[in-house]
Length: 372
Image (cartoon, rainbow, N blue to C red):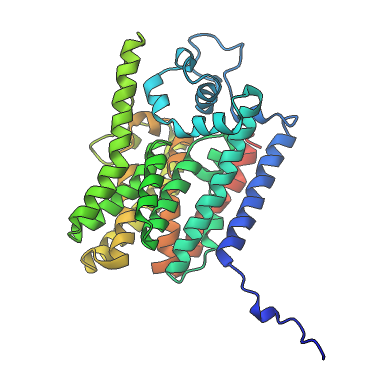
């Protein structure tokens, strides 16, 4: 009996999985390139304070990842070596994961931090690609999310944003699939990774509220935000009992983009206008118009609110954030993901324009700033 040839038409290829694996490969190559230029030292991504820095020095003193590294190494004693300890400890998920995966060995913590962010790349890209596929758009849009300047900055600096955004977007995807309990758990972890992780549940709860899904609104908002605020109060009480000076973290501004106006550096202003404010406000206006026309109902109403929530969040960032151009671009991670999804679904002709705006920025600035 003659065997029939293998039919490759029967092999089902998951484009979302292929996209996630391809992007993960790119991110891994990016990290390896950086490590190869720094004697393969994983601590090169942390940017710790150099021992030669003076006590009152405000430049060349490292970056925020050093605080999360310290928490992972010494959870109970790290507060003695940082400013705003309650604020730093509020973002507890990333350093605790680093401690868990390093088995508490300080030598392995930097490697664990890199591994967490690479895992976050796969998680976030898969979820964003799945959301795009559910909307009959190409999941490959998620590739362009990771190669945006803000995302690459967060990877280069061992920061929290990829994990926070990845968890939040995965929560959104799971909520749409009907796995609502899992979605709330993911939102909780996203918020306790960094505040940008709470923007998606904020928008989701707003949508359920407008659609009079009272119980769902209570679950989404209460489940996502209550742990964040409870943990915040615990940390403030601990800070007082430990005898540490209580300093309020930066507060959101009330007037939109007033924080940006406080930054008087010309080059910073130009960069943020072109690559942050202009695209965010433009897409925000479009989302507002289409959301209004849909009466904020259905999927288009939800997607509109997702865009508006991220635009609103960016507009009320504290002045201190706007003074740090790097921090501004890192904070755009969630918004860039949602905007790319919006354009791919509702304005596909404009999607190449967004790529043309954001992609060259990373290609030009990374080598110029010596970040490679």
